[in-house]
Length: 427
Image 1: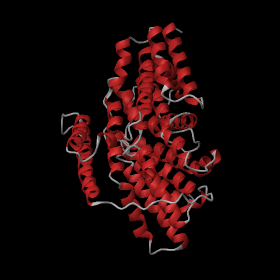
Image 2: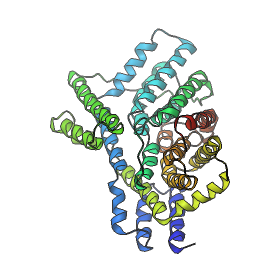
Image 3: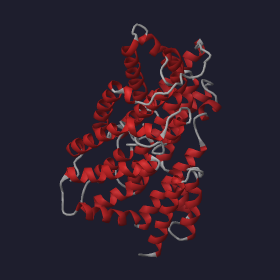
Image 4: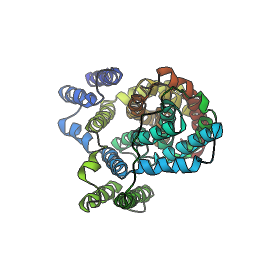
């Protein structure tokens, strides 16, 4: 083993230890890895700085900015009132099931175009209102939304950081990137089947005697409603640009369309600069840079190839698409239970590219299977940033995630193994 490979392995150990350490913030990954990568000669300073300039990182920033703008216009009030109106004629268990169905569809569908962790946070005032008015456990509603936003976010490229950072690995390797809806072939069936399970079996979801704090009812002003319309149109333009860009209809980078829409909203005083930045967390940005850096280290040092060879040996001579999909997806889904899901995707995606090169397979198909597996953050509270953040507002325990989440894991495995080889050929 060369010294470069050895130091890259040290970087990987540092990366995993920081993520697993309860007292170290995730952004320390970049701060610790950058000097190690430079001083050991794995990467030059210009290459390290380059990880701060990836299109995926800018996409994350834009989504966070739009999340802040949408939250500032009072969409939580609109959604809460909608749930109350639709379920007002129902009573008892039927009403509760209907509430969960509406919450699932609403939060899940919004998560297809907004980062799932911010959607979950934006829903917190809505959930407190629903819990108080309908005497439903706030913890139960929060866990429900954690999973609904996770499943909904997996449908598109921009809905979850897991998909974004799987895409980053392709970008770093100079390979064709995913389109906005490439994930939908597998993620939509998982979203539908998983939703049916969650709504019908919502009694399996942990319930505690916490009905939320008293809230001051907020009334939308005419000015706020106008702001909602303008921000909604601006965000729709950005989404259309993403779709057209992924289809090759336009040559303009969609990220610059997003920045232009944000600029127009601020310069026209529809929103304030503070509102735009309210959901943009510097800790998240630096952590994203840390993931980008780990991806680059694995690519440039050959560490990804080393792990890829190990998995190729496990696959052996088999060219059975179902076997390959199962090994890759299930392996990623097991790993993600013990680390942040987007870090898992960022770490394993380069390995997937190496596997594809060894097998002569389509790298997008392998990386997509990894992204689906890494997104299965259902069993532990440390499996995703959404789990970690939202758990702080509840009485949820470690085992509550496992009890309600294991059927979602099985559903994801089955859909991925059966569907992915059919719609995204490996060879």
